[in-house]
Length: 352
Ligand code: PMV
Image (cartoon, rainbow, N blue to C red):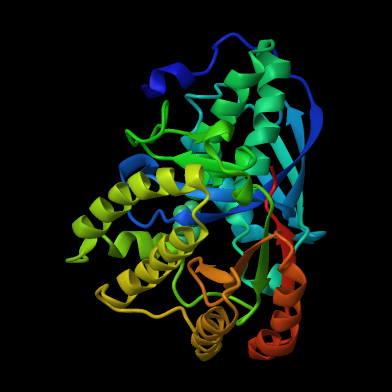
């Protein structure tokens, strides 16, 4: 698969239009951390798409005006975001040749708290890419739905890597691996439904907001530091290798092995940060306290509560709906919530 497939149709007719799209966030189980030129991931990753954590975006395109972008986040002008989008649109012109031929007013809002530290770039760029593809279909004539979704994933990737996985529901893979048919570094593909045990299809993700606010190191900087990390190659190799047991686990429904692999991936991500030069730590005291309590709880009860982390201090609490969830929810409310900054928890489920 090459980028050739995504080169835009040079024959188009533009007109002023307003389109609206929404896109969910996602949480990776095998993590993407480290990339090459043009947003090519250093290793394949797999994520769950969330259900409630979403970005809703309306995009007003005013044809025949000089190119400019204005953005509003929850009604407030966002200059930094507009600059980012302007750069992004210039970057993807070869894939959408009409894109610089007008002015944009983009209004966007997240269904999760703005200051929560939940990454909005995945859902944000996912929603923008979807809006662009709706406009593209209007201006150039309809393409196939499948092709359009794939191109939206391709375009979202160029905005923020992990965003490309948010275009599909369920478990989604980005990055080429022999373990998943048709997987690609250029866009994400849904993980085949018949290869997923029912145990993994009804899952909760409660995000404990340990630290709200800006992260000290952005993921762009974090990815960059993998270039000089002496453990990077080993890490990329391990992530590739982890697809072999992951595939087996997803098929067999082995929860214990799933927990072990997912937690290992989360801790490896943060270990990479600690071994970067300069080193950085995004976990907070509360993150470690919660992890230890989860391990104690599992030892005592044998119930399937476990965690993953993204590039921040928040803890994603994962647990299946298998009849034990009430006990787990009570434990979270009584024991874990106290480690958050403001009693913050975002209760989500996986979107299948
Ligand atoms: O898409 P980015 O550049 O925000 O990177 C996301 C990296 C992680 O969230 C830490 C892992 C992942 O695969 O989503």
